Image 1: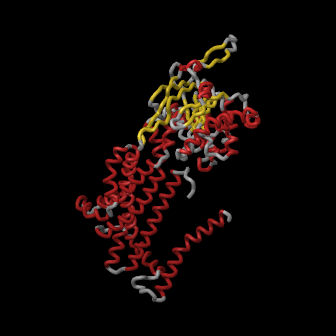
Image 2: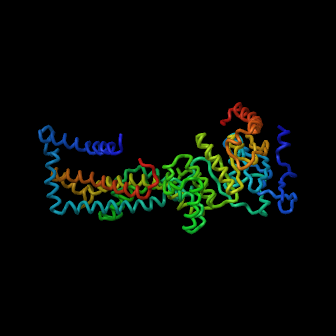
Image 3: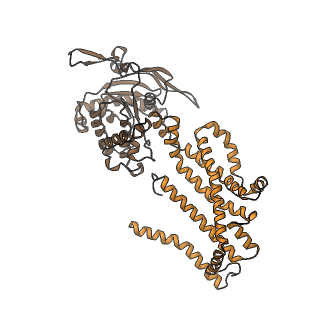
Length: 256
Length: 291
């Protein structure tokens, strides 16, 4: 099979799954097999989407959620990578932090939201913080295991050439751990979206989560669906941009 | 066995190798570049102390191609790592009489996966120079020359995952040569290669050695690889790792694989080394030690 035809089949398959689901949904809703009040046909969502767009509310919601996701993501990921590298490189730090990391890792982070609100109020600070908390240990543990998984012969090579500690870090530990760091970031980005939507359900006046929850409360079901679909698209676009960044930073990885 | 040891093991008197001084026509005695005396290495394992090496005495001359051959677990890699500064002997001492005690600059070619996957071929080769702060132009020029030498010029910007195993080992060799070491340490560099590729790289290494005349200590468990490359073959046996014999290899240089293998002496030396090793390998098998 040629590369082009393989690629064409891939694209067709990728696009056909959502297309099939939407088509079945459309038919079931229009024929009344499912209640169109709660399961409106996808094509009828379009006018609602345009209305929301015209009001300007939708763009505000998207912008607000996006800023919270990215802000919280950076707030959690940067210290997470640094602590993960330190844990991978220095065993005393590893054994000191490890019990806390594994215990906290298992707590569903949205459960901490009341505490965060008590500490920081219901403003933006608490949104960034809950996102940061929810991805921090994910990034820490992935980064650490990335450093630990580096083939010891790479360290031997660096040592044999007389690498200093700083050179060992910049030329072996960091590049060697980068693939695992990206795995952590990818998972973290997904969690950011989950957590911010949850947080906006409970305590927010703007944001996509707020749009979904408020629409549900007043039974504006079509608006709710617009919010849901936009959340999906947002998640997809965020992952896509991380993929692009990864290809840029890790050109040496075999294609997956 | 004892006679072999008596014949071939370097006694204290033979530590200085005689060479002919061409200007005076007199025999002069060159001190050894590397002198190992009573080297031992033991580890604390889960079942008590494991002796990896015991009483290793060896002299290596400057510019010599010395091959250590032996079964798994004979401590040959440990010995190499000591010379590379990656391990320390628990007993004995390593000295460098030829350079008044200063250890020769060494570079090691490691077993298996050691080429950095995150660096291109050129950057891998220039790695050692970069650590030493060589200017970019110098690094580039040196890397280009070495890529030429190992036949990888076309792959300067390729990453290791795009290369074959044989090409990756060429990169590892070029990376070690890039820092222009006095001593090249090679730990089974061709162990993971298929036989034909191994033959090609052996010939390449012979050619590179003719051009550079580095002191080489090369570890392998292949007897014919040892015979093809070596000036002297050091035969080691395991449990604990000791030197059983040191055998001079008489084949003329520059060598080719074909010339070495068609020499009747090749078969005789092969048999002799195999005889030294087989008892040890059989004993290890009988004792249920993984080989």
